[in-house]
Amino acid sequence: MTDTPTDSLSPRSSFRPGFRLPALPPWAPSWAFLICVGLPTLLAAVYFLLIASPRYVSEARFIVRQAGQNQPDALGLTLQGVGLGSTQTDAFAVHDYMRSRDAVAELDRTLDLSRMLGPPGVDVLSRWPRPWESHTREGLYQGYQRFVTVGYDATTGISILRVEAYRPEDAQRLAETLLAGGEDLVNRLNARSVADAVTQAERARDEARARLDEAQRNLVAFRNRERFIDPSMVAAEGAGLIGELSATLAGLRAERAQLAAEAPQSPQLPSLDNRIAAYERQISAERSKLAGAATSLVPAVSAYEDLVLERELADRQLSEATAALVVAERDARRQSLYLQRVVNPGLADEPTRPRRWRAVLIVLLGSLLLYGVGWLVWSGLREHRHQG
Image (tube, rainbow, N blue to C red):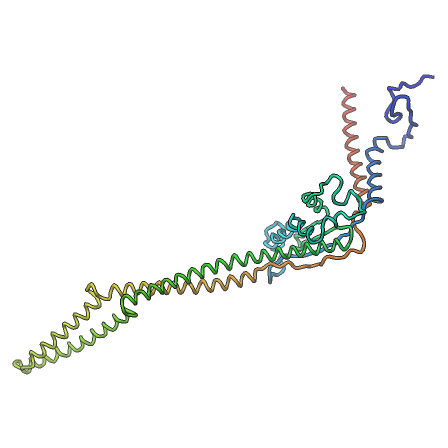
């Protein structure tokens, strides 16, 4: 009987020359299958079923909406679904805060986040920091992402916050603190929005008030310089005086005409002529005060009317700016955002993470998939080599 050469031993029958393993039955899996599929599944089962520390989940639901905003209709839900809703954008701002470094810093300052994510006695593969993670702020931020999940339901517009921790009280406190931080963020956004809108309206009102004050000062200076309150009133009084003088002059002319017709040689005619001439000179003088002379009231009346128009425009602008300020304050209050809790963070009475059997099944299926792909690749290469 001849021995089988050692260099022809297959991997199923021997690991090294001179050493022989008992042959596996035909129905038994190959060593490659056991190493690629059986070993990972066994390790996953040992870890998830015996070693992995249980984690408790605290879940909260909330919405970000404007004051007095009704539930969206079908069109509003469609716009939210494609990212066109304004409240959706505001909700995403809260989501980004909850996942941000600012939130991590606040949680670590108020609740000692590093202790909650890595308490003594938990397994090193799920806690923070894991063996390959750094014990730094950046490492804490990266590890924090594994324990906090924030989602958004585009159908209902409700945001979902899930926090995992190794104690139910820790999970609930973390969720409460994150919600409080989100409410503070919304309040800061409200304050900034109100401040911007009201500040612009107040600036417009102050500018209108300054314009009105300047117009009023110019009008007062004009009155002091010209020594009358209203040149238009003076012009009206002058026109009235001219009218009275003209009426009297017309009466004197009629009287002289009648007297000259009845008594052409009457000694009263020279006296009437003198009176008529005096009235004519007075009328001419009053007319020169109103117009036609360098010292007439026409330039003064024109300047006065411009000043009055400027004051009226400034007063109207101030009234409109004041009304706009009231509207801006009212709109700012009506458009304020609110973070409204739909479901408060709960206190879990049993751990729900990790999902042990699900994790083992995922490892098994993944290993089978990789093994199948590798087997197909190897079979193709071997067939190609044989054909060559």
